[in-house]
Length: 315
Image (cartoon, rainbow, N blue to C red; front, top):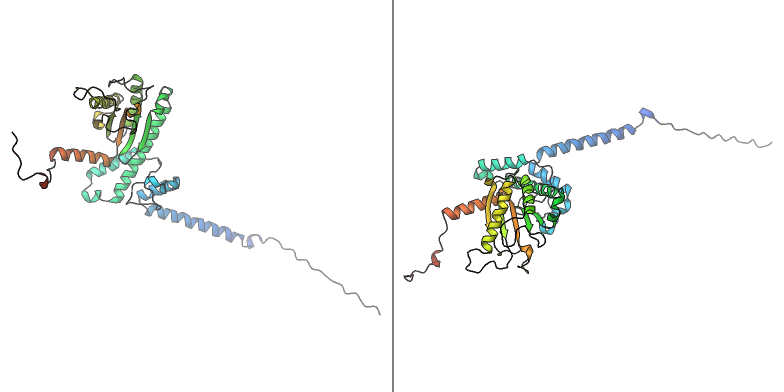
């Protein structure tokens, strides 16, 4: 009898998508819940942080490298109230905020002024305002073809005292006539244009006039580099006033002569002849005003051991 052949049956099970009965919706819901939790966490952090912390954090994400720069007082921490204020790009700062800080500082008592966070917030806002103003001045100069010559003569930098606007004399394009405080017409037009920007801020302005070391007159002359530098600083002030700046906005007009050359190795160079317009921040303004007033009203007596007991008689 022949052996019967065994029939092999293969069953193939087809798997279909489970549709709404599957688990894929759970993953989508978990992602949504996680995003919602992160959103509420961000809202809570925004509510709990101070205005200063928000501005510093915004600056950190705008330029993280600025925190690590060696010459900029950088710090690896997002907020360092013990150090210098961070140099941050402008984040749309309103002039009204700076004005409000100044008004609050006038009304605040000593305890409030010792609040480090308040001081740093006010300084940070003012630093951003000065940076924004520097950019606006650059746009005003760059937007006028007649000022193309001025690009090599202008230098701007935000310092610890404020915004330093340095206008350097060039032999082929001098700001003043030789040995004179008469400003050239093209230099006047530049200062008039700059005044339209400077007049909109509450900051005080100091102007410094500098000359080169080439002697102007003899030691006994009535008119020297000291008088010339002071007259040139005053000429710059008059030009800014003609451009719209109020006279109350000026803090100091100082002639430096040739005592502080820009090129110390070559004090006779033409680049040492310059006008510096310093837009003072609030800290520098208070220091100048308070120190000047104190020295004028109170002065200072010399140390007791500086005066010998037996002074010789002078006839």
